[in-house]
Length: 153
Image (cartoon, rainbow, N blue to C red; front, side):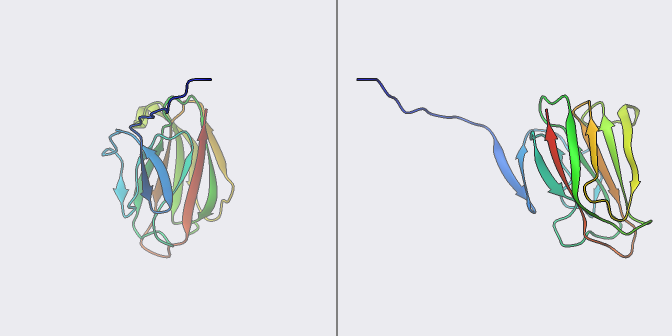
C-alpha cells in the first residue's frame, strides 16, 4: 500500500473587494496616483482582472483619477473597455504604456488620447507590461463611466 500525507499550502496573497472588483493586492505604493472623486485608484498587480472608475452607478463630477496595471512579471499587458460612456466632448480618458510603475512623464507612451463618448470594446496593448489609465470629468452631466478588463503575459 502507498504512503499518503495531507499537503499544507501557505500563501501571503490577500484578495480585496473594491466596489465590484476583486483584485490581488501587493505591497505596491499607490500614493503617487491622482485620485480625486474616484474612490478606487490603485496599482493592480494581478495577471488579469477588471476595475470600474467608480463604485456608484455614475461617476462623480470634477474627477481626476489614475490607475496603473502592472502585473507582476508581465512583459505585455492588454486592456479592453467592456463599458465606456462618458459625457461626449467634456469627460476624457487617456491610456498610456509605461516604462515604470509610477508611469513617469518621461517613460509614458500615449496609446489613446482623449477618449470620450461611447467606446465599447476599445482595446490597447503595452509591450512594457505596464499601463496607466487616466480619467478627467468636468462639473456637469455625468454618465455611466467605464470598466476595463486586462490580461497579461
